[in-house]
Amino acid sequence: MSLKAKTIELRRRMQDAIQGGGQKAIDKQTAMGKMTARERIISLLDPNSFNEYDLFVEHTARDFDMDKKVLPGDGVITGTGKIGGHPICIYAQDFTVAGGSLGLMHAKKITKIMDHAMNLKVPIIGINDSGGARIQEGVNSLAGYGEIFFRNTQASGVIPQISVILGPCAGGAVYSPALTDFVFVVDKISKMFITGPEVIKTVLGEEISMEELGGARVQAEITGNAHFFAKSEKECFDQIKKLVTYIPWNNTKRADGFAIKQPKSKTYNIEKLFPTDPKVPYDVRNVIKALTDNSDFFEVQEFFAPNIVIGFARINGQTIGFVANQPLCLAGVLDVDSSDKAARFIRFCDAFNIPLITLVDLPGYLPGVDQEHAGVIRHGAKVLYAYSEATVPKITIILRKAYGGGYIAMCSHHLRADFVFAWPTAEIAVMGPEGAANIIFRNEIMSAADPDEMRKQKVKEYQQKFANPYVAAANGYVDAIIDPKETRKYVVHALEISVNKSDVRPNKKHGIPPF
Ligand code: HXC
Image 1: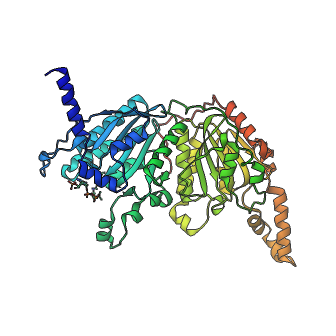
Image 2: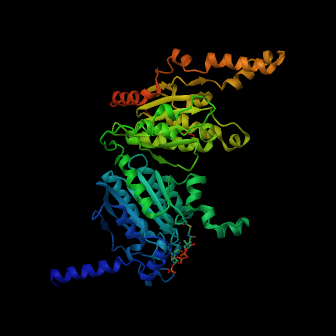
Image 3: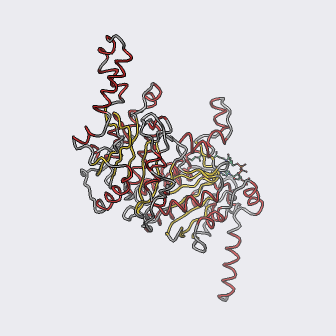
């Protein structure tokens, strides 16, 4: 056969393989408002940057008439490409082929591209759209999942791992996304659960729809399994493209630097955004935007545990991870969920050389039976652990309240912040003036002729003595009390000074964080 004929034969075979599960299955996929696996990869990657591998892989199953079935690509597309010029490895499950179910060869394609990503030290992106373990392949499917989970764990903290849920992701299959760094979901399309509605009805007698059980909103707002929520697949891909600009390729690199832009000072005038009265709420995201280049802020887990705000921004062109109490919600307290949210983000930033800026304004950890029984001790400890463990530059700014455990937890000097700045409005104390006065002056208040008047007087006394930054500054726990409008100047300087920071922790196999 001539080269020309062989090339024509290759093209024919490729054409057959890229049809996936055939037109009927593709039409069903499209009717659900979903792109096909190949369309997804093409939409996400830079134009003409995708190289596909293992297109001709075939399944090896023989039982249940599987020997008579052809499953093009074994239901998953794998390859390498670029996003914004950055190299990445990618796989996308093809639901049109046996429901994207995971058999032995399907899993081998995924683990092969994961191994590539680790060897090449580039991010791995997995697009999940699958009925889960391929039932006909039995334990081989489970083995495949196990191999993926192992690699997810090995890759953790070495290369960024991104999971995109664009269809069902059920049973044990959810544990690969759960082991990765960022999970993206799309409204009405993504579904994640360990056991589906049918099993729940049979075992527990409870009725619930797939959407209510594990739809995108549930994952973004209630469970915290998802980090980014989008209304369409296109919006989701735009979010991924943006994320990739903020993170490095691997843990030996820093994220790309960009041209320096000043904050939009007219919109984000720091003095006008901030109420000095400690009881008045405000949106801390505006304070973040008053500090960042071009006032951009890329929020992570926006809808989960909104009492803490986390996300990426740039200052002086460099990526920064922000962690900030949000006084708009529950006065910005630390609770079970906000502790989990912050701790994981801190560890991501630390693993990938992203400096951390912490904005503090909180009354402490949330009290209450619910929180105690939900394990606020165990979860809250994660924040202490994550900050103490982090060796990237850490800059803390105390805006207003820093009471009790909250003061310590939000990256105080005691957890090895490099710089702690306080605004003159900061109140650093064991607890708020009202609570404190009620306890330490109880006898004087109770025995006074006018207890209310006495309480007011004692609260004021306490406020004057302790509800300020000066006692902490006198002890060296605060490095500088600064004029709020000079915050960016101080932060830029601190980042420049910390550029060669190297902090050594005791040699150990690994710590035992309060998981
Ligand atoms: C083999 C599967 C499959 C599976 C779907 N298909 N899931 N084949 N193994 N797990 C096939 C269907 O037979 C069908 O083939 C095609 O994919 C499309 O599926 P439909 O059911 O027609 O699609 P839809 O109506 O959209 O429903 C999607 C679905 C449903 C909700 C995902 O297919 C479903 O419930 N599948 C089973 C889910 C499940 O229980 N998986 C096992 C989870 S346990 P044809 O030939 O008709 O087109 C698990 C353990 C992992 O994953 C543990 C790891 C530690």
